[in-house]
Image 1: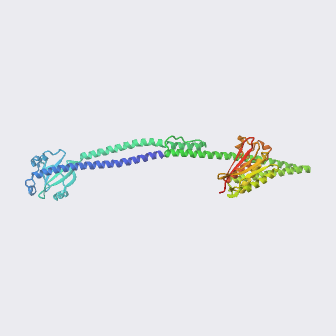
Image 2 (image 1 turned 135 degrees about the vertical axis):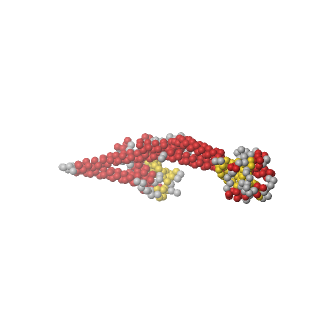
Image 3 (image 1 turned 60 degrees about the horizontal axis):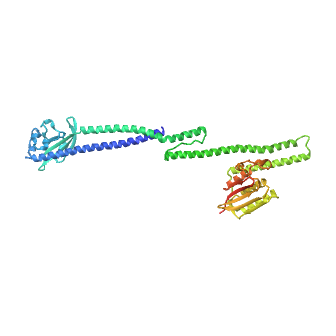
Length: 476
């Protein structure tokens, strides 16, 4: 069962229950109101006739002492009082004596008796009113019996009856009308609810269609179009679109990572193939018969040693990157940065004794990994020495809650279109043929700085050199 049908059925069930409660309450009120109106009219008639009978009584005990009751009299001869002469046609009135015998009726007929039970007669003899329903002339009637007391004796009994047929017919008509109106209302409400539920659930259907399209096409650019109010459905559509945006970003990141992985494998294969090919060729030369001259063998062995060292450096760099990608945790300790900078600059001067490396740093402390920072500084100084011919400046200053370390050279600089790729693995500029390296130094530096919670960037302007900027957390 669809949610649309369940929503419509639930709505109509609530409406039907409400109509049922309202109908039962209205029917009960109407039934009680008409019943009370009948009783009030009968009480009024009984009271008026009772006063008339009291005014006309001359011998109170006459009607109770007769052994054989006389035949009933018509109202015209029983009493000349106007109350009897002007009885409404809708009233059924009978006058009984104290023993329950019919004394007077509209036409004085013997068959005009109204029902009266023994319990009712006993109650009337005790001076108490009596209400009951019975059958008279094939119709249901409500009968009110009222004793007339004279000298504390029941002299007469007035019976006033009203037919219930008209009331019952009106109540039945009311019930049928309400039932028909309720059924019609429920049918109309079902149609309206069905249409409204479609309008309300349309955004959810669009979300379903969008999700199905994404699953079929693997395209996370789809979005749910919703122009309605920002209610629960609007918030759902907004949340779904926000989720799709994050999924699209994650999917693109995964796709980019897979592409980088493929390129990484291709680059590694390329970098390893060259020294392996050289080693394989040199081994072939060493195995030649007759053997090559001793001086050529010495050159070949030296070449093989260089290629082996190159492969070892490449494997070590790849191992550092692999550990960084695996989320290797670095130490988070406080230490002064000036000794690390001084030691690193001293070691970098041994790479090119003729180059000047100037250090200007304040006595600051940072939070991070000592060995990882030293490796990053060596990578930055090595790049500065390789890509420039002038002096290299190293500085460290406080910048708010961070410490900024700058390694600045005065080389040719980096073009803007190349600057955005310098942290990509195996990326090398146009001078890659003349400058040794694998293009892994800066990616390693970025991985290590990121693992320490810092930030690394490169600022460069063609013709004015480059500056490697490190931002590290300052110790408290």
